Image (cartoon, rainbow, N blue to C red; front, side):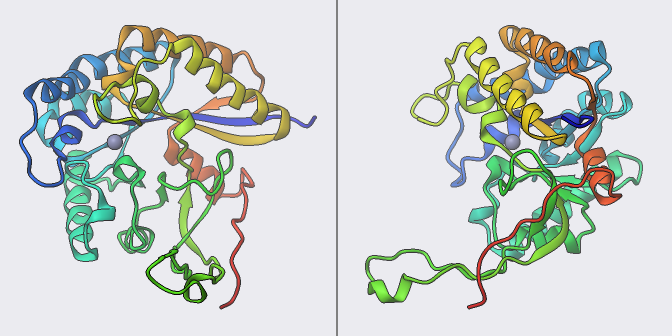
Length: 305
Ligand SMILES: [Zn+2]
């Protein structure tokens, strides 16, 4: 076993009211759900700031521009405490459902709102709302000068250069002959965007946030069960890799709940009991990779077609 270097960090999605407004078809939202978002931006956010302060952790707050414009005083606390503020759309819209031009409009608006709020400092990182992405995303981030993304899942414990998603693939369509879709995927081409991978198994929302009628958000998992799932991922990583990253995704309206704050305290203390652990915002993980201080991996696959 070599000397360990473990980069651990929280990506906090300040979805607030924005997430609930994203009904995608303009359908009216239930005011109780709006209140859950307000709880996140106020009570939940404050509790996470106290948690991070207690353990000396600087985190990344991926903030929809709508959250920032609606709760500027709350986000000022985040900014002034030295945390990173990253991009997370405007109203948590699913870019997979927008055309390329609309995606660009949202990205440009979000960048300008965050840049102005941070005194002219451009955001370095992006995570797609609900990790619902598009083929245009990585090229658009690159063109906009964003340094890293946190939406893809080619690996779970290592940084890498994100594929640009320009490779061909053919969806199975039973309306067409089998011969038309029995084709391999085209060769993957890397972009210049660093990927700090996303991971549903290190996310608080699906297990802990109940949304009636949505099977993916059951919401009533015992926090000790979730803690065990997270610990086992950490244990495996620590056994198998000398260097790795461990980005955890949380939401103030979920992780600000009392029972979840307690889980985070136990988890942070467990992680801190290991040698070689360094907590940092996701932008610093990207810098470590870009400057060669953590090797990461290369994503390969696909063939010339
Ligand atoms: Zn989100």
